[in-house]
Image 1 (tube, rainbow, N blue to C red):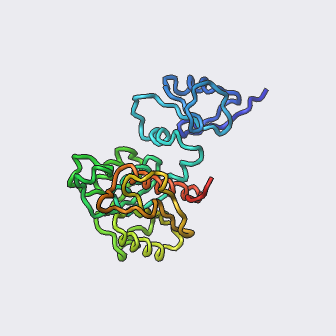
Image 2: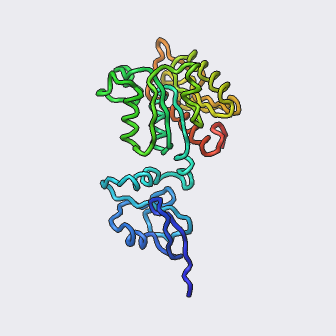
Length: 276
């Protein structure tokens, strides 16, 4: 009698198993001391029969993984089929402040393969109310401090940085090899220059920008809008920083994660502004 075989993936390694194999049976064979079993992106508490093309991750708590395992463990909760496309993406981030630092962390945790970050500023005490830095990084160039933080999160992501001002003259050279550019500036005039220059120089590439995230207005007023075929804008498009309306971590973070999610959806071929 011929035993039918299925193909499964264990910690991103392809395996052949007999049809009808149970999850706990596989655990005993491959990783008996695993504490957490994740099947197709979701923790599995009960035993189950494995199906062809199932993706299983087995994790031992408190045990640092080797580099080969780390990537599988980082993306264990991802939707199956997502990670390969995310890993091949190349993203640029213009600005490393409240928006840019949070966007970079979200994309690094997601496993984007290459991120280039450009900024001319240094970490200041006032930045710590909303930006992803630490007290002992005050005075460091933001791009260097952020690269250090990102590499601690996911050393498998390639982080390239440029410490200096982005201008209409050097923008093309800085971001010619990225698929998507994320605008994360503070000043409206700088945002406009970057958007106009990038969309003119790279008409086939996507730009994800932000406008309106100051204060403590309701979070639900921040949304992602499609401006044209290659330009998306995140924020409420109204609330700017000024006297009596500062920049605070919650709304800046909401806008930043709108931008990061827009990037992810573009990588996966989805419209970031699509409804339901």
